[in-house]
Image (cartoon, rainbow, N blue to C red; front, side):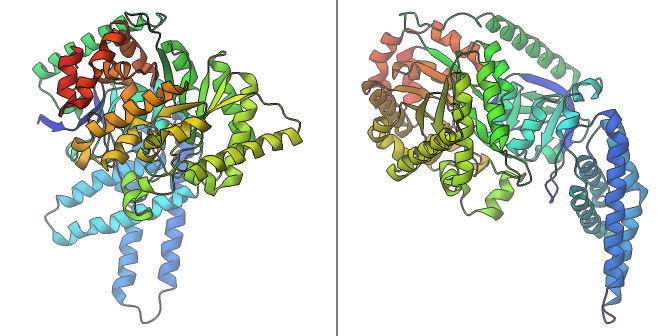
Length: 586
Ligand code: PEP
Ligand code: MG
């Protein structure tokens, strides 16, 4: 039966494909594709995990005290029976062989199927066995973590064997790190139950340049494995099992947006200059060093934000050492062929945990209020050895090209001083080792309202500033950027937000400092005229957005826009006023 699910559009375009469900188990597991050649090894891991759990359960049974109730032993019997039941492990092997899922993913996919069968049972006793099955699967998943393999090994080949039909990813929630694994994967679109427009999962999805809808609440419950799904990333609509007429309509739109993309691609090498001759710098946001190639291809004139924290995620407590980081930064710097690369020091915490964990889990269990907690520079300064390791690696990479260091989430002068001390110390350590490094410019992210309000302080100390509008909006409006239930209140047009942005740009320009915007606003065509009017001449965004933004820049008259800015800033409804004053359609 055809149905529609509504959510928040986060990445434009239309995707049509078969649903691949990433189940959300209580034990958060890795999801990745393996190559057909790895299937035997994966099944062997599953067998080993099953033997481990069988052993655990038998030991438990053996060690039961003599006065333990008889039901306990009977329950363990049920668990052992479920463990050896072919409908669980046999079917899981099919997911591994035919769908090329890793063992954990295959097991949680099978749990979903079997759990639904239990739900539909008439017999109450049997229905209640679902909880037992979940416990057994949880034990198996835990046992599998003891036999873990490197997920990255299978990803590159995934494209070649995922089957004929295009695939779309449907999940309750996807951690940013998992999203990154899917980046080099086969999906042509994705939809999640949770998340907001600028949640980090949405940002990574946007960087994959595939249509996506988040915050679609019930999607992962309503959509079943293999359903045909249309993801309308412009409207935030997901159509499940569409009728032939609807499907044809969307296929037409899909072709249209591909043509539009091809047309924009032709602007790649055109310099971004406004009608009145103002040059505008369009930079790329990247997550991994390999993305630098994409940045070059898009016509970016540098990297305005390298989110280095993605190098630190999902490493089982083994953070990258100085050499590994140095290689990663050098790779990005060299790939940019002399163009500047802005490396942001690690920004973990909040919805970017170091270890795999869903945002929901993080919110509820691990910190009281993660967005206000120990994240970004606060975390770095609490781990000085780790911070210096990163600084040394970045400084060393600066011998290979133009490098800028960007520090996230600053608010206090004491933090500024601590950062400068650490940089001095890192330089001295390199001097002691006689290792070379180049000159670097130092920048502060302005993403906490306190930093914007005291912008002059930051301009005195730093060579440049970069506005992190994603967080600036979150903290100004007290809206969790990852929470879909308040997504409607996440409003970049709020007068208070505009005031802070305009003030930061104006002061930075007056002080002769380079100022850029690297939040999602910079890659959203709706804000190009507004930011140009405010005097912004440097925008940093996902490479895929550059052509569309360039098109708007080429059609803009910066001085005319600047004259009309006061009308917009003073309006009660700046979004409506901007449409009239700037005479633009969003
Ligand atoms: C921002 O906050 O706008 C930003 C660019 O950083 P991040 O999205 O990684 O928090
Ligand atoms: Mg930020």
